[in-house]
Length: 521
Image (cartoon, rainbow, N blue to C red; front, side):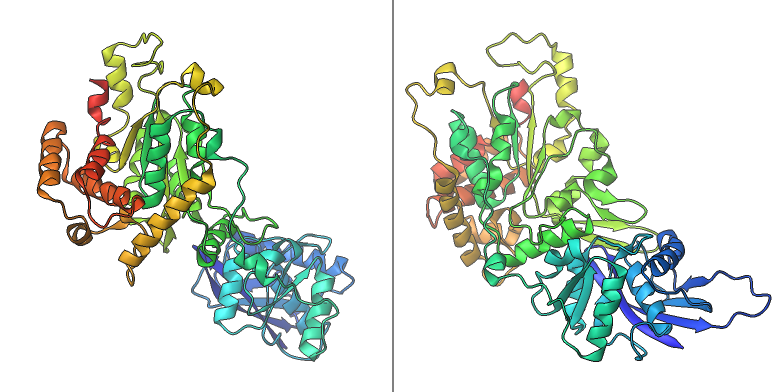
C-alpha cells in the first residue's frame, strides 16, 4: 500500500512543496536492507531520521510496521535537507499501516516538524516560508510544532494546527481526514496583531547629550537610506547614536515585517515571537568571517547583512575587521542583495540595509581630540589604510563625533535633545515625498536613485553647480561621490519640503564628505 503526505523544504528564503510517498512491502527471507529506506536525494539529517522515526512511533503508543518501509521524497532531483521531514514521514508510515484512517493520503494537509525519540515534536526553521508556500499551492491545513504556530499563523488564509507530540498529530490528522471538526481549533492571530507592526523601543534619541551634528546626520541618513560613518575618540557616543537609529526609521509596513520575519525564520531566530515588528539592528563582532557577514555554508544561510534587511547593520571599530571581510560588503551595498553560488544551486538573499560604521581616528583613539595622541604618522596611516578607498567611497555621510563637553554631559545651559518620535515624524514626511516621487518604480528612498533619476530630480542652479565643481576639484572626489552628494542633498531638501535643491542643501551634503582621507592629513 502506498500512502501520500505532503511537506515542504526551504531553499533560501522560499519553500518548495515536497510530496512524500510511503510504501510498505514484505521482506524477502534473505533481505538485509534497512527497515526504512529513504530515497529522493536526502541529506545526512534526513537519512538519520530513520531511527528517530522508528523510536518516536514505538514510544507514542503505535506499532512500527513489520514490513519494509520505502519513503520517496518528490521531486527526486531536488536535495532535501534538515529534520523537518520527520513528522510527515512518521504520519505517512502510520497512514500506510492503517493507524490514522482508511484513506490513502492526507488530503489538503501539510506537516513539518522534527521528532524526538519519545515522540515530542520539536520546532524547525523556515515555517513562515513553508506557510506561504502552502497558501500559494492551495493547501488548507498546516500541522506545525507548537513553538512555530504563531509564526505560521501570520498567514491568515490557511488553518494552522499546533501539535506537541506525534500522537497529537496522528489524532489530528485522522480527524481532519474524516471531515470531523478538530478538537483543538486552529490558531488564529487577531488582525490587530498583524496590523500593529510599529515596534516599541527601549532607547530614545533624547538620551544622547550634545552631538547635534551627528544627530542631524543620522536624521538625513534615515530619511534617504544613506550609509554613514562616525569618526571620533572613545566614549564620544558613536555606539549610543547608532543604536538609536532604528527608533527614527519609518514604522514597518506589514509586507516589510513579513519579509524580515521570513529571513529570521530561515535562520532560526524568530522563536515564539511570530511576526517581527521592529526593524532589525545587527552588530556583528569584528572577528566575523565572510560567510558570517554575507551568508553561506554548505547549506547556505543568510548572513548578518541579510538579517539586517530593512534595518541597520552596525560595524563598530571598523578598522578592526579583516579587510577581506569588509571588501565583500561592496556588492550588497550597491545591489541590495546577496547571491551565494554553489555547485548545485545559487541562492539570493535580500540585503537592503543601512550601514552605520564607527571608528577611532588613530590606534590610540585620541588624534585630534583634547587628549594627547602618541601615535606616529605611519601608525595612523596604517590604521586608516585598513579601510579601502572604494569602500569609503560607498559611504555617503562621514561625520566627526568629538568628545562631549562636561556642561553638555551634565545638561548645564543646553536644552534636552528632541525625542525619537519628533525626528521620526520628519523622516516619515521625507519618505512620503520620495514614495510619491518614485511612484510605480521599485525605489523607496533617494539612496537607490539611478543616474537617470539623479539627472531628473537633482537639477542644480548656477550657484550650486559652481559649488559642486569646486568641491570636486578641491577634494578630488570620484564620480560615485558626485552622485552620492547629489542624493544626500536631495534628501536634505526633502526634509525641508523643498522641490528644488538649493546651495545650502548642497553645501551640507558636501560637508558630509569633507572627512574623507583629508581628515588625517
